[in-house]
Image (cartoon, rainbow, N blue to C red; front, side, top):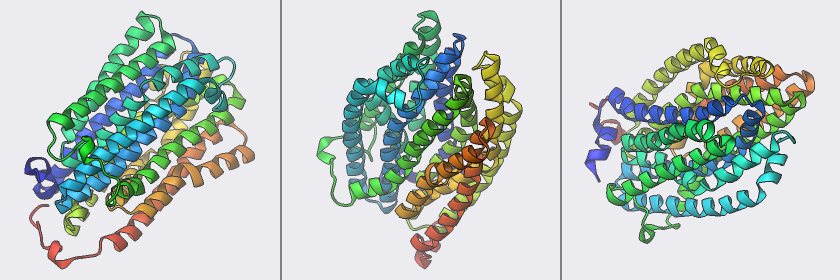
Length: 459
């Protein structure tokens, strides 16, 4: 095994091991956040709320393909980190190659489909006659970069499995920073508006994907994208999909739920849809940073699980839980009290701004428990606990959220209570995550005396 990249997983003090993986992951998520906000911000500078609404409507369809990247990224990371913990480098390389070639094939097929059917898709997910042109134009151009989007999302996670969190972070920074730089140039200077935002997104994902491919081909000793290493059998496909599918289902259901809430909210007008889209992006400031925390600790937990080091696993989890709580409360306060400034940056129309403020402060009520939710989601995935991961991921944005959303619509029939369905769901999901983790830990990680004494000095 390459000791340089995995030494910190096995032997570094727990705070150092956690922070060295979490900080690059959070920075990566911060760049993703800035990139997501940039499109809406610079489109908002055109003073055309219909453009903002159009991009907001197209975003859920775009997120479906990010979910494919998450499938291979989270599933691959879970399997590879456990294999490296066991010292099985051959399976780790085969899993990496499997993730690359399978995800790329899906990306190419998906891009062709979206380009052909962009307008019908946008109509189906809530575009009105005033926003259809903007949303379909954005989606059709973004579709050109779907293969690169999937690769960059998958390998920004997988590379962390070999202990190279800084490399994963660098790839995200390069792609997203380029997108942020190109946005004002293409939207405001070239006056390409929605098309400019989409082109900047494609270029950013392309550069990020190329960076990761270069790293794996010429730098990595533990990962591979060579066809000779491609393998489906031997538990590789099952190992990736058993964790990746539940994780991607959460992203897919998030897109579906966004489509549903956009459709329901459209009954209150396009400005309500624009305000909702901005509120979701403001809430992402909390969500993305805490996702970064959860994603950052997963390879470390997976390595501990693969090495059967129960004591170190629990130490990492305890430290991460306390860190998550602290971050959650700080970020919630920032987003709640700074909601006015944040929403104003995206929306100039007074009606849309009023909706944006209302929804932003409603969504942020779930902030205090979001860190706990994402830490325990990733802890469950780190053990390869497929069924609990499946239950949790289909519950948060599906089995729990959708019934609550439609119940609130039927009972209250007002804009604010539609938005309130999300924080109510998040509190239920956080409680469910803790319960499922306790059950999974007892089942999958039974005490082994020999391993309890190993590395006892690495706290």
